[in-house]
Amino acid sequence: MHEKPYRSVVKAVSWRTVGTLDTMIVSYFVTGNLIMAASIGSIEVITKMALYYFHERAWNKLSFGKVKETGNDYQI
Image 1 (cartoon, rainbow, N blue to C red):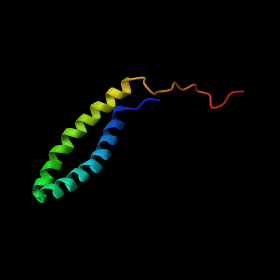
Image 2 (tube, helix red, strand yellow; image 1 turned 135 degrees about the vertical axis):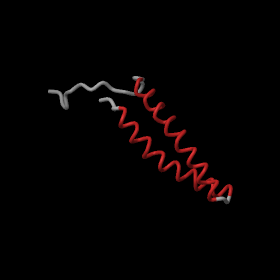
Image 3 (cartoon, rainbow, N blue to C red; image 1 turned 60 degrees about the vertical axis):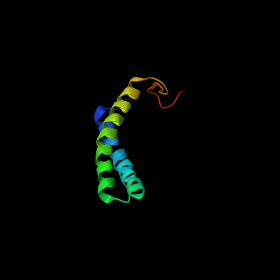
Image 4 (tube, helix red, strand yellow; image 1 turned 120 degrees about the vertical axis):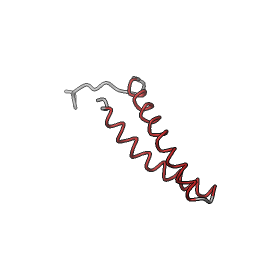
């Protein structure tokens, strides 16, 4: 089984939502400035989503850690 590219996009959006909220919270604690935290989160979400997508697609091209499906659920 292989993944379609759109699956990587959906996974990227879902993960970046969690990651960006974390970045914004940490940025707020470090800077104490809500506007600065939102700015950092806004830039971070775009760059990291693109990086994640290309990282996923590159890993899909590798056979490392994949097992070929046999098509049989059982053997007699």
